[in-house]
Amino acid sequence: MIINDKFKYPILERVDTDIGRHYLDSNNKPVPSVTTILSGTSKSKDGLMQWRIRVGEEEAERIIKQSTDIGTAVHEAIENYLNGKSWDNFEETYDQLLAKKMSNKFIKDGLKGITDIWGLEVGLVLDNLYAGTADCVGEYEGIPTLIDFKTAKKIKKREWIEDYFLQGCAYANAHNVMFGTKIEQIVILMVDRNAIFQEFIVRPTEFNFLTRKWKNRLIEFNNKYNV
View 1 (cartoon, rainbow, N blue to C red):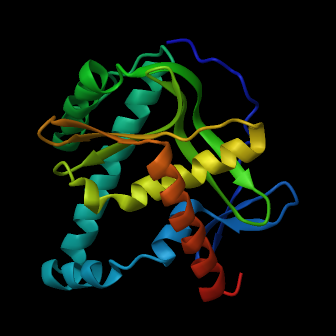
View 2 (cartoon, rainbow, N blue to C red):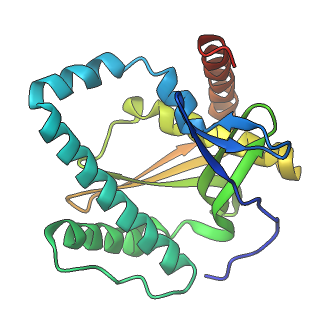
């Protein structure tokens, strides 16, 4: 698929701080990443801490690293495929072969709805507020959409992934402000380790509701950390 370079996206400069990842905005001021804001205001941290205690710190770190490595490999394969580059560059290890199977599923079934691509791994920033990198911006079934690729050990229920939708809303709103677009659709494309594919779509009415929730999370983060 040919990338339609409609917009000039900024290259974000990352800054790590005591409260998480930040990026420099156009005024050279560090602003928190979307994932830092969501993590800093998450209500599920207690459950995560209990899980770490239950499985042990070493095993928890192993599981997290494995998930991160698989996710990174799959994202790289998808990006290469959509850019028309060689994507099947996996090593003969268990994790890499698992990533290859998941990437194959994305390519076979998960990317068909993407009808136009404006950018991949694009930097988005709102001065003095937040910044982040979106997997894909373009059109999904002909509708302007913020698209995110997610890997999972097992397909998640919709009610478990609200933060994924809030992340998409944050990016879409930043894109709308930066470029005068009207993106009101979020699509999460997910493949699990059994190569099961699931599509989650947020349409305009829900998008507006989730945008309000995102703004409340941003205010909560700013108040919590005196931003």
